[in-house]
Every structure is written in C-alpha cells, then in structure tokens.
Image (tube, rainbow, N blue to C red; front, side, top):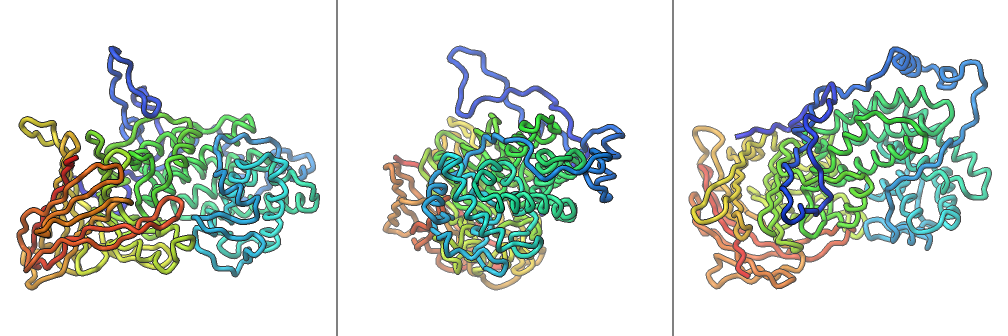
Length: 621
C-alpha cells in the first residue's frame, strides 16, 4: 500500500529534462477513426518528465553575471545601457493574450458594479481603502485587477477605457504607498502587475493624462517592490505570481533584460517548488490550478509580444498542470468541489484549457495531488486519498480526506458542499467556516469532529498527516474488471485511538459502487467504550430521495430520470442501532450561488475497539 505524507509526492526538482517519449496527445473528446490503428497510450506527464530539486534556467556566464548584478541592486538601466540616460517608463509592446474574461462580469462593470461570486457590489460605494474589510474572494478580484479581462471581453477598448480609468483612479487614490493592506499580498501584487501590462491598452487608453502618468508610476513601483519581495515568499502560487510580475515587467518595460533574467531564474525555481511530479499544486485547490495555467498563458503571451524566446520550462510546466485539472471534471464539464471551491463552470474551465493550447487526457492517478479518478461507462468517481495541504500552502483549507464525488453522465449523484472560498458573496460569510468542515464532505465523521483542525483565515491545524492507499483492478467472473481503491488516514488516531479506512469498488460497467468504512484501532490495545459516527453522502442538486420502508435503503431519482438505489450492508462493531435518514444539505455552484439539497446520513455508535460498515449504490434505471 502506498503511503502519502502531508507533502506533495514529488519534491522539487533540479533539472527539467525533455520528454522520455514523444507521447501522442489528442484533442479533448476526440477518438480514432473507424478502422484506424489504435494510437499508443498517452504517457502521463508524471511519467514523461523527470523533476528534481530545482528547475534550472540554463544560461551562459554573461547572463549569470547580469542576474548577479541585478540581484545585488544595480539598476537595470545601468546594466542594460550603462552610458545612456534611463528611459521614461512606458509599455514597449502590446500583448494579445488568448485568455478571455467573463463577459457577464464585464457588462456588470460597465453598468456600474462588480459582479463577484454572484453578488453585485456598486463601484461608487465600494471601499477601496487599506483598512477596509472584504471577503477574501472580493479582495482577490478587486486588488488583482482580474476584472480587466472581464471588461476587455465585454466591450471594445474605447468603450471600456473610461470604466478602467474610473476604477484604477479610485484604487490608486486608496493605495498611494506600496506594502500596506491585503492589496499588497505578493500574490495579488504579482497578478495585478501582469494584468496591468497585459491590458495596458485598456488601462492607459483613456484621455486622463495625469492618471496615465500615475498608472505608469504605479507599474514601475510595483515591479521594484516585487523585485525585493518575490524571493521571500513561501512556496506556492503567491511566489509564482510575484515572480511572474517581475518577468512581465522585464519583458515590457524599458531596460528590462536584467530584470527579466533575474525573474526567470526565480520563476522557474518557484514553479518547481509549487508543482509536484504529477502536476498538482501544493494547495490541492482546483481554482489555484486553473489560476496557474491562466497566469502562465498570459506570461507566455508577454514573451510573444516582446519577441523573446521563453525558457522551455514555462510551456512544459503549463502542460504538466492541465491533466490533473481535467481529472476533476465531471460529465457536466464542471469541476468537483474540493478545497473550498464551488463547482467551477464548464465554460470557464474550457476557456482556460483552450487558451493554453494543451490537448491531453485527464490524469487517472494523481498520487501527489491526491485525487483518484475512476471512469467506468458513464459513471465517474473522484476520491480524495491524500492529506490536506499544509497550513502555509492552504488557500481555503478543508478537512476532506477520504471524501468522494460520484456522477452519472451529466448528472451528479454524490457531491461535497464546496463554496467556502466563495463566502461573502451569495454564500453568507458566517457559514464559510462550516463549509470547510469534514461534515460538509461525503465521508465519515467521528464524534462531530473534523479529521483535520479547521483554523481561521483558510488555515489548517493538526489532524491527517499520512494517508495509505492502494489501487488495483479486480477480476469478476462474467463481468468487466472492477477498480478498487483502499485508503486510510490517521486524523482521528491521537484523539480517539482509531484510524479511518475506506474501500471503494466501482464495477467495470459503472453501474455499481460498493463502499466500506472501517474503524481500526491505532494501538494494539484498543480503547473501551463507544463513539458516535456519521457517514454522510451529500446529494447532487435536484436529486430526489425516498427512504425505503425498512429504513435500510433509499431511491435516488436524478433530474434526467436516471434511478440509483442506495442500500446499507451489514455492520460489525456497531454498538446499538445504525440508522439511515435524510437531512437538509447545501451545495454551492461555481458562480457562488448556494442551493438547498439533501444528504443521506448513516448514523450510530461504534465500539472504540473498531467497526466495519458497508453500503452500496446501484444503478437500476
């Protein structure tokens, strides 16, 4: 059985080597022509790329010397043109990024308000000040200037420039000095600088010359601030975004070559620290994965605009990030609800993947990232078999270990509540913490306690440190091979002396999912007594549930008429009656809208010496 500690399976790497084999990649959804020879299997990026501790940018002694000079503080113009006067700040090229924003959000901006996670926030009354307190998701959109892409998608440049000028003027007035408030988190500052440079024609295309001068000064000031800050950031998307801002400024501002060379070395190393061997980011968050792909696409567009050849590692890293993300897509094209995110819409995911130009297949076994994917027939299973992210890497960390999601074609059967990261919009901020709890996921909960402690500000505490898992094919006489995944975590061991083991077996035709939840004593001498438990199955939106007369099963009618049956199996180690009932639940979609749903709950008391509880989902119509 493979053991995953609370770190990415792949550590960081010293050299990025070329592909070991030229594996074919196919357009998404494509298939071989009838009668054509089947193509060889696509080699997963985790097998085709070798990573070590640092992904080094190869350069000659001249470039190394330039990096050293810039790092110790010699101004870029003094290195690039030592006998000339420094040029005034200007953007030297126009970037054409394939990334596209949200047209609806852009139309809302032109109508006078931000549209963030479904909530409308009037621009005229929005508090941009350093001391203002907004939901993290709101701060992220406003301070990163990601709304510029939405504005660009909704109107011609001439029509959007006045709106961009208005918001930029309000923001600059509130943030005259760098380094203060949430706007100056390194991740947001890096994303903001890239957005300013990519959308420079929109930002600088208005008639207010004084504002244009202030914006150019802010661009130069932010770039200089990131020069000093990027290297001090911890590993993760924040550090990558900070270095990306440095590189973009080096590409698109005068005398930029020293800054670009300096930034490239930091950026490629930061990417190696953020991304595991299988392509999953340290935060284990699908939205962060999506953001990283989008950021690299924007940055590569900056290289193209500047007519500079990018380090090969940037394109390879982008390619590495895509297959794990695809593994979290359900049949409806939306992503699963993991690590605080809602079900990110299919059109948003497809737009980012299309802009990246990467065409490949989903990654079935992302051991480091920790999300197992099984596809059988029209049924798709996603299973979380890794520890949560470390607190320093968590974006909106959730105690979701051994939770799963299940879908049948475009219909979701079992989901996680999701949406903690979207709290503050249509999701009330007061319930955001509850959406991070183990009970908000489709897994087992002991004594109403989280398997990993859920702290404030998206951080996580003690709990799951190790997950053992094993995946194998099981032969079934007269049937296609089934896939069995067995996983166990130690999150409850120190408090209750029990480890939670979950076994999921999906039949080869996708019509049956058998499950077992097992409590195993973590010491030789198990504790005496009883402990309450609940096994929760949050149901997809629109699923109608009807309990059977014996309260041992339930019918699940999906919105399109498909029918699944749920049935309790036998139990060993139950200390009293084990009940099955339905309760209210909540599911948050990718636009931040909460929907009332239901959940099936198996509840009872288990012996502290261990127990075993089995259940089954079966498609009947």
